[in-house]
Image (cartoon, rainbow, N blue to C red):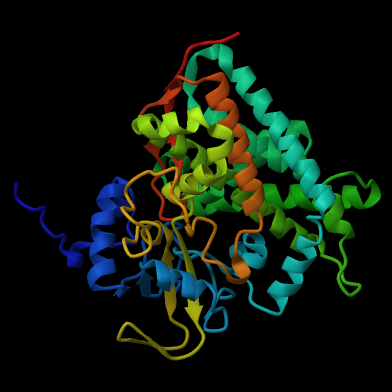
Length: 421
């Protein structure tokens, strides 16, 4: 049997939607070659997804190895976030309204993250986690009589939706509208989403929907405090300083996207992986309570729900023999880092007993490590614990994936199981 041909790296455009429309295994043929032969490589600007007029677009450096992604994440003084964190370009006002402290550096990042973190008190987190377990049981119980359907609609999207809504205090009547707007912010690269409309118009409407809703809810909670995160946010103080309504709205947008999409898509990818790896599934079913915490880490590594983030250099430096000037765009490829052979033994093996599993699914550490990582883990443990208990024979078909260089998203995925009362 002849060896597979080595991909010609000159033919690869990592910033094109065509590239991100390929299966993950096929994309990784190119990333594997980059990891071996060009751990840092310079590329032309990514595809303009929003149709921005007269905006200077930058070439970028691709970072594909585990250690480099991790080290850059932990060095915000050299690789800053305040000049943008998205792979593709976007108007500055969009970034300000949607990324909150994700696109900030110290000292402003430290202040805002501190204010938000102060709202995640032990009492808040304990209340949220108990709610997650209750909601997971309800969601699975409601799906059990159906015998199957679209796994995303039936199971995967529901727990993150209700978790974030309960946590913030979004009324039942507004939840679908909020999640639909949050979805639009990360799916506008897919032609199915925006149709004939200009993508920048679709994104602008989604941002307005989320920001205006958050501003109204913050004002309401100032007058009528409740037992929810929005109340905690409007009341939180550090050194006598409170968050403005604009800062709360930006954080709400960030939380609506990050809190819904990452857990939702990890759930879908993990369900498909359990279907095509029956031996791993049996291990989990035989001893789920003991194995689930370790299994969840492999779920996140396998899914790598966030594909890319960027940083910008603040000084001249050398990396793997390449000279980088100040102000250069550096893109971190998390899916490649989580498949790095030097960091993970047999990285394309779905292994629920993989330990240690220091994946980068929640970021590479440092000041921008995912604030909601523990809540995401709780959701994944809860939903899969219930799924495998109530629907032990559930199986998922091949997913239909979102075309995106940002979110490793599952649009639709059929599932079947024995219907139960």
